[in-house]
Structures are given as C-alpha cells and as structure tokens.
Figure (tube, protein in one colour):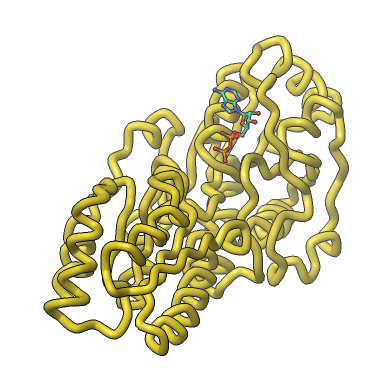
Length: 320
Ligand code: ADP
C-alpha cells in the first residue's frame, strides 16, 4: 500500500502544471497518502531537495502559470549512478511512488526509475502537444490561445497596410500550435514540420493570393525551426506586392494563467495519476484519448500513434 507520494515537474514548463500539482496533492490526501514536493525536477531528487506539502501549500495556484516546484534539465540523469542518488533519497524519505509532470525526456527518466523499483506515474506537461501516449498535453490550449490573440492583432494591422505577416509559433517538432492557431485565425497559409517548408511554393502561393484573389492581407503561421522568418519576410516584400513583416512570438507562449481547458485537464490528470498508483500500477502514463482520461504503461505510450491531422490541414487550405 502506498503511504507517501512525491511529485515533480521536469523539462520545459507549461501553464497548467500548477493545477496538476494541486490535484496530485489534494487527491493523495483524499486517499490518506502523504505528499512531498521535489524542487527543480530530477535535480531536487539528486540533491535531496524534497519537502512535505500540505493542502494549504497549493492554495490558489490553480490560476498561476509556470510551476511552483521549479523545473530543470539534468542531462546527467541518463546515468545509472546519478539516478542511484535519487533512489537513495526517495528511500531515505520512505517515498513509495513518484508523479512526474513533464515531456518525453522526463518520461524516459521516469521509466528508468520505475525499472529500478519505484512506482511512477507520468503526466504530459508541455505547450508543444508532442508527448507520447496522449492526444493533448497540459499547456497546449493556453499557448494556443496566446498565439491566437497575437495573430488576431497582427491581422488587424496587416489589413490596413497590405501586409503579409509571417508569425513564427512554438511547437518544437510538432505543428499543432501552428495548425490550430492557423485554423482559429483564418490564416492564409500554415507551414509546419508535417507540411514541410518550400520557399518557392510559399512565394508562389502568396502571389496567387495577391494577384488572383486580390487579398488585402495575408497571414502566414509557421512553426519554429523551419526557416529564418525575418529573411522570408524580406523575400516576400521583394517578390510580391505585399509588404512582408515577421514576428517571432517566442516565450510569451509558455506563460500566462492556464485556460479553463488546461486547468480541468490538469486536475483530471493529477487525480488519475494518483489513482493509477493507488491501484498498484508501477509505470503508467496518464493521457487524454478519445475525449477521455487514459492510462497505459509508459512503454506503450512511446508506441502509441497519435491521430493524423490530415483532415485539419485540408480544412485550413480549403477555407482560405
Ligand atoms: P522534456 O521532459 O520536456 O522532454 P527534456 O528532454 O529536457 O525535457 O528532459 C527532461 C529531463 O529528463 C532531462 O534533463 C533529464 O534529466 C531527464 N531525461 C531525459 N532523457 C532521459 C533518459 N533517456 N534517461 C533518463 N533521464 C532522462
């Protein structure tokens, strides 16, 4: 029977992580389980920065972005000898189980710990929506809404000046923020890792919008890491009659108070992670599949094929 659970946040932070922490703490308490917070992800496990959390420690954090526990990247955690320090500290505090809120790197760390005997449950936390074993991650909806608000504003000014706004959004190697914000703002062009970036095709497409469709403006939403958007905007100005302007949204997408959807998702996932541990699962990943909370072994999550977004890419193109 589980008596003590520890919770940590790891990798890139995301709005809604606090709501998940709160849920893990309050849910554990409802089962009579003591909860410990770990500061700065796996770093706190190695350095024994582990402290008991009471119900009041998580009061009011459901509305806050970021993570009260802090997060860190600890490359050394890939080494068994380093993980051994973490296991010793967990043992010292008589902690039976660990909840890890983070991305796929954090999942790998959690799986390695599970293989050494500590029960773990993982919760997907990242704005990028790119974590195995779930269709949606905590933080994605908030980042999406931040991107939408910015793109809407850029469109207003683009229309007044026959501009083409090239907006770079985050997502790492996943195009979901670009695709969904592109649909929600009626963007003229969406370019993601899934569609690939073709310079000539992009210019040709914008020329058609300009010369054939007589569009007053064009908004291009593009995922990060595909091309230099400043350079692309210069070429758009030179090769079409649009005046090209680039905006990199950057880290604002990682901040802010979580949306209702992220708060609720995080609350459900936190509770589900605790339940999974109470039921005796040793290495489960919590997710969101087919409109419901899911739970599967972490290794199965790595194999889980997320649904393809072909219909959404097609919809975006057809409605321009
Ligand atoms: P994310 O969890 O957001 O994907 P990272 O990839 O940076 O972020 O991973 C977060 C942390 O997880 C790393 O700093 C490291 O401590 C741990 N980690 C990543 N990959 C592994 C691995 N293969 N084995 C053990 N720990 C890992």
